Amino acid sequence: MIIRKRLTAGVCIVLATLTAGLGTALPAAADEPPSSASPKVELVLDVSGSMRTRDIDGKSRMTAAKQAFNDVLDSVPEQVQLGIRTLGADYPGDDRKVGCKDTRQLYPVGPLDRTEAKTAVATLAPTGWTPIGPALLGAADDLEGGESTRRIVLITDGEDTCGPLDPCEVARDIAARGVHLVIDTLGLVPNTKIRQQLTCIAEATGGTYTAVQHTEELSDRVKQLVDRAAEPVITPVATEGADSCSAAPRLKAGLYTDREKFGQHRWYRVDVLPGQELRASVSVAADRAVNNDYGVLLRAVTKHGREIVRGSESGTGRTDVISSGLRYPKPEQDDNENEKPAAEAVCLQLSNSFSAAASVKTSPGLPVELTVDLVDGPDNAADPAAFGLGRGWWLLGVLVLTGLVAGLLTGWISRWRVAVWRTN
Image 1 (cartoon, rainbow, N blue to C red):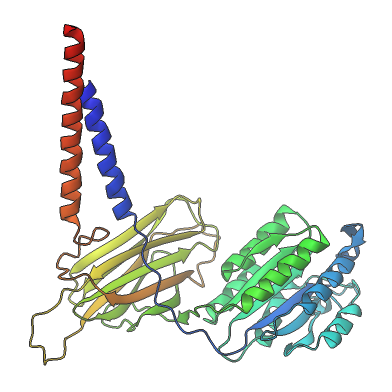
Image 2 (image 1 turned 60 degrees about the vertical axis):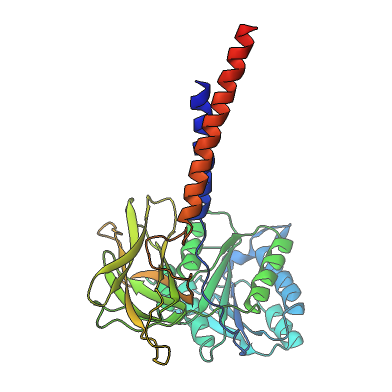
């Protein structure tokens, strides 16, 4: 019994070591130089009639929003170009068609004149409808042009009242344009339907949703989001995978975005030089209601169709993003040093097993983020199946043997001590 316990302890140590080796995270893509263009931010403020409700620190929602805007405008980083757009600020009538067009740019996106921007905000009064969808489309147009990062910050107290233009679908369409535009949403009312709609808008573009019920919370959160826009980021490059390896786009090291429909296969190509290691990872976002039990598969194959390595992951509806990755070290070639080494065309195939109810729209496809990195591979890397451990199988063997011997030796000593004790 003692021997069995000691053996179990030794095996547990070995398994823990093996798990640590296999659990090594895939490195991130090679850093890209930050863009020199000034980041752009547009604050989109709900000025609909419901904003006159007095439930934020004893003040109306509009008063709290104005105070928060003044605090934010005082702290906007110099390099940020900021604009302000309103929704529901001008039309007080009952004509739905007119009310759902009620959005305008209050302050143009550009270098900030704090006094002018504060004066414009001070004139606002709760008025009309809640056309969130049209406001987001207008804000996206306001931020067009240039290569800088772009961020929309939506502050609202209600869900859109101007269907059938679903603001969540609008956000997906904006994301499908392939520009790096993030929408963050802030809800002033802790309502389930509002939270679901604002969360959907944010997740469609990689943004965040925050519920705020106090003026200070609103100020702090908007400041954080504006400051975040000024931070250097890696801008994803929009690409479009092909239906076959031969027609696939050639990718270099970097971060890429695409769209993939339910059950679709997308192909990409990467040229890997001898001695390099290809590291690729993919994330697919379930930005709409999908059925439980789904998966994503990323395969690396030769241009002739022979599989090199694969990575896969499955989900059960408990997460909004599912990711997988792979590594392929291309062995060094023994050719003449004077000859230029030949690159191998490695094809990456991305597949998914998502499905949804018949009422769920399948277009545009699910958002895809693909990371490709090419680094110097391990010396003499000849076995692409040894990922995670590299060429450390000998170390694993030593650990296994050491654990086994330690367990046997400890068990033998324990039995000897028990025998001595009984004879005494």
